[in-house]
Amino acid sequence: MILFAVKEPARPAGLRKVRNPLSRAELRLLGSMYWAVVAVATVFTLARFSEAFLILRAEEVGLSLMLVPLVLVGMNAVYALSAWPAGVLSDRMSRPTMLMAGLGLLIAADLVLALAPGFVGLGLGIALWGLHMGVTQGLLSALVAEAVPAELRGTAYGMFNLITGGALLLASVIAGGLWQGMGSEATFLAGAAFAVIAALGLIPLRNKLA
Image: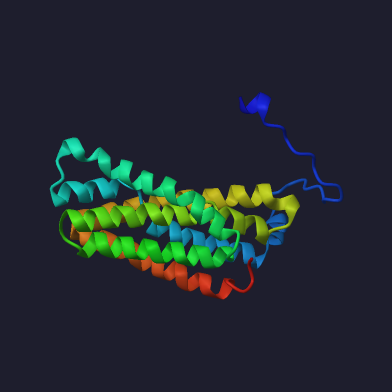
């Protein structure tokens, strides 16, 4: 369907032709703003470990095995319901401000999941996690597009996905190690700490990006 229904847009006139996008010279042209966005995204990804840990937390709280799938159902329901209003809101607010709000929601989710007991804490934490996903979805990709020259966007996205993909793997390794060694509370508190660091890194960029 993609091959036949999606048409490749025409290359805008006047763009410089990039012969070797992975050369040092071309990577330098991505600019410091791009690498700052990648750095924030990498730390954000470390805070955003696999949703499998939400399931583990549900089992730890005492949710029966038969009801455990409701964790992801509930999270994705909140995500889906919040994505459209968040998209409308992002048209009226700057993307860094929206991303900051999403980081705040992730911090709140981690703190609730770490510290709030019982099913109420679990449900609230899952809802906040889904809400942060709805608010932040697509924002980092949009910031990448704004931070680089048009002819280098393909390279920029490729490098961005390579680095954040590695960070996502590392995030789950760190979260798993903390869970095994120190328990669920340490895992979610570490996630909150990474989110705080990402938010602090975003502050200097707020006035430089739309």
